[in-house]
Image (tube, rainbow, N blue to C red):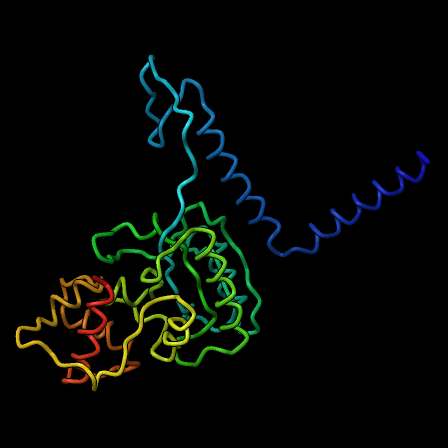
Length: 272
């Protein structure tokens, strides 16, 4: 009996060693674990210190009511690279300083690269509504796409499954499923105009609009104020208009015609 147990443990050990040796990301996975352990150690330090390394007061009293911070926004990107493997490499090189919580390949494979409760470096300089530190309040999802192609069916199915889980787990509002080009329209256009936002909205991930022909624009309609209500940063109004048209109209032309203004009016009502 004892011999059988030893054989089982030996087999499990060999499987573990074999699995580690086969992983091309064994080294970066080790670095990930080291970084997480360092954060955990910081949280457990005594005397207690905050995230800046400053000690708490000597009469510190720890509350018993706490939990991990949870994201309430999902930001969707395209990788702007030529393969899933290229993106995985980019996100595991320390010098790039970029990352995401998830990478979804064209074949539908989902790589969960970072715990949802940790902060990824995916949003950069950005703003949505009154939120400017999007990295701290969002989950980043990268879709393998060079920016000039459509998104595969397998990829979209995996994305919808993931979004459903995230929405239910973290109670993410319908309005808070957005794109990188929405939060940083002056410098980003992802996911590109081919992305099927309407399909996502039909599943409860983001708002869409109704038939604009049934809408009458108010005489005092202010389209810039409407864009602000939706969430766009209005420091560059041209970029904000471009971001709106790319997301909701799959249009990359300049300016706004009457039907497009009606769409914007409808959306502003839903985002109020």
